[in-house]
Image 1 (cartoon, helix red, strand yellow):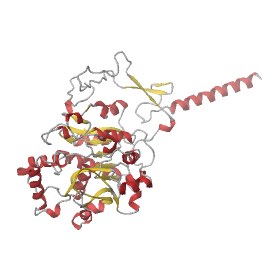
Image 2 (image 1 turned 90 degrees about the horizontal axis):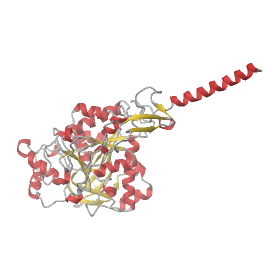
Image 3 (image 1 turned 60 degrees about the vertical axis):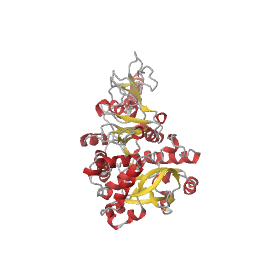
Image 4 (image 1 turned 180 degrees about the vertical axis):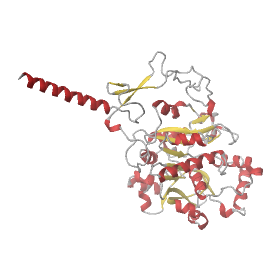
Length: 461
């Protein structure tokens, strides 16, 4: 009798031990960061140090004392909740299957300070991202990571392995194939194609300038072959800056001169984009087919919203150039037509039709000439639509892009490395208050001296 009780008691202890052991093994942080399964496991959580010297030195615009994060005296440790549901398998070859609950979206910066800069875009180590793109990515459930346009190829390759999608935002940049911005864009595009070819599902989206960037890259030849670099490069930069500026009267003669040089050039057949007039105006979108209504971003919209965007001007647009449907299908641009298919078109202020939404035929790459981020997050331009339907459009676009990014499982090596990547390390400027056409802008100085938390001497604006 005593032996039976002892065996039963021992059996229960063995069962309890196995249960506890299984529970410990499954206690892994959601991104699967390194270290043994049993390392630093405490009460179902894994302690993840964030660095003993982490502090914020972001000074407010009003000149108040700098805040310190975390407060002095804190133990400066972050615990990362772990659940069985959040465990995922990292690596390549996932074919877009699975679910990443913590996606990171890389946003390519653009030269200069954007609409904060009265002198146009010049070759500089300073770059920027309008905060509306950061907020749009967050609205979809991802976290934004700035990718400096003047990064080296090695830096781009490293960050590509840490993020789950890329956004080429709107704005202004030199689209010459050898410009620093385009070199980085081409490298990131190439990395995206290579990843998808080996079944490492990786999405890329371009908005406005991003649409144009993708068009130029895919088509091959330099968009601006009509402009001789040695004669026109400085003028060209100014023109590209004012392409999206609200200051339409400024530089009009110079812009018209360069535009005429482009359209009258003997290399006209090699140009990808044509001049269009769509300055800070909301527009309707016209589906090219019934099938297009179910593709890409529109797959996240209900029929009611899709019907409304064809009838109501809900899509905010602001650009000087665009891709005509004829150019997309033209024989001299076979590479472009084989790669992209149009989903919607729009009519500009002069009655000319252009492609306003397109998607890659074989890759998770999309592009819009309309700005999905503006409806919810930009307030400096009066004509931006802010109705409930306009906001629904913004949200649907964000949901689609981030849902694509969740199919990728790239990741940093540690929580600290992840934290160091994020835009949360930087301070946005209230640009609208300074007369800019964007509400907030992130400005990144030289990579070594960015407006970044953790730097001892931070330059703020």
